[in-house]
Image 1 (cartoon, rainbow, N blue to C red):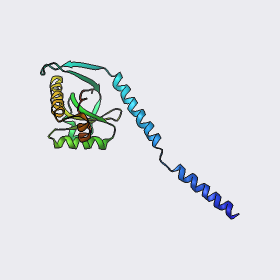
Image 2: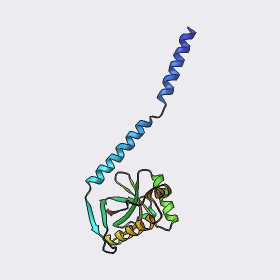
Image 3: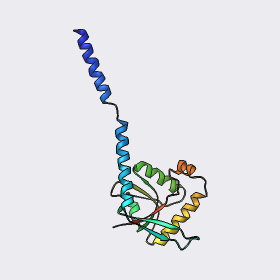
Image 4: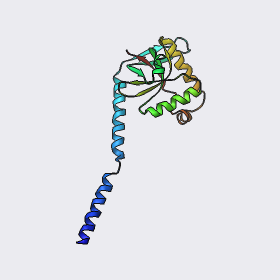
Length: 170
């Protein structure tokens, strides 16, 4: 009888121990599904190509339209129609960390969030599309001169080779 109770307690502990393990694959599936939804939405959104007249040769700039709101009330006044985005992150802490690093380099950074919950790290915001295009190119040149994209990815979390312009929808 004692052996039966011992086996029953052992089986219960075994079931309890196995059921409490976090399912990493479940987290990974949710993450991958969210990334896939974002990619599909980005692909389905209309993009406009603008030729920047201030640079030689002309640089094509991708413009995506999206409804975003400032994460912090202090950033709301600085959020204009055309925004230079250096990163799009799903985790707020990561976006805040990148914001702090860029502010240490002298940039005025705005965190905005779209309707799907993605955080857009914005380094410049303008009412004029051409100004935004020029700033995008300036940032690209500045950080491209610092070295290879792997160094930039390790240091800042982004490679600075995929800067884009976000046209804010109201």
